[in-house]
Image (cartoon, rainbow, N blue to C red; front, side):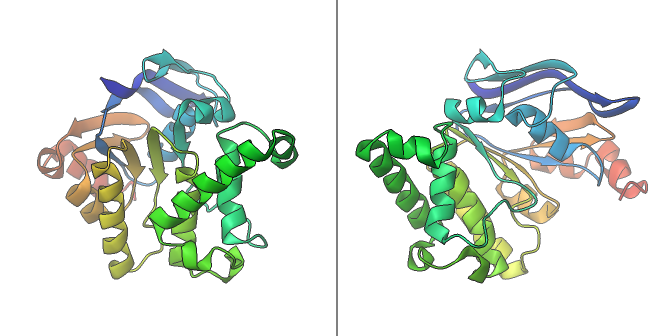
Length: 250
C-alpha cells in the first residue's frame, strides 16, 4: 500500500506552471528523494502535498484518503509532518518549548486550548516532546534557548518539531542545507535510521551524494514536470536528467 499518492498534480501561477501534471507515490516504509535544478518546483510540490499551497489540478491521497485542498493542520492531524527549508523555530523560546509547539501542531489547538484540555493532554504533549528530543539527541540542551544552538543543532530541532507530531509520513525539505560534510554524513545516518524504524520519508535535497546513498527511489523534476522516477543507479545515468542539470538551469 502507498502512504502517499499524487495524481496529475499541478499548480499554476498565472501563465507559470510551477508544478505541471506530476504523478508519483511513496510506499509504506519507503525513503524517496526529490531532486531537480533550482526553480524546478520541488518546494512548491511539497507545499501542495502538505496543504500550504492551493492545488490548481490533480489529486493528493494520503493513506488512501483524498486530502486535496485540506488545510495544513488537518493534514498534520492525519499523520503527515514536514520540515521547512527556512527553519521555523522560535529563537527566544527554549528547545523543549519549540518542540512542544510542534507537538501541538498535530492537535490543531493553540497553547491555551491545550491547557483547557486538561492535565492528560498536557502530559501527552510533554511525552511526545521528550521522545522527539531523545530521537534527535537534544535532551541535554532542552532548557537552552533555541537562539543559542549551533546551526547544525537547529536543523535537528526543526526535525524534532516534526517528529513530536508522531507522524506516519515525514517530509524533509533540504535537511542538509548549510551543513558541513561531517554533519551531512551524520544526518544521512539519522534519516536512514528513522526510515529503518518504519517511518516513510520523502526528502528534497541538493546534495546528490546524500540522496543517491540513502534513497531507495529518486524522483526528478525540471521546469515543473517529472522527468525521471526510478532507483538511484538508473537516475544517476539518465541522459534526460543529466541534460536538465548541465543545460544551464542551475
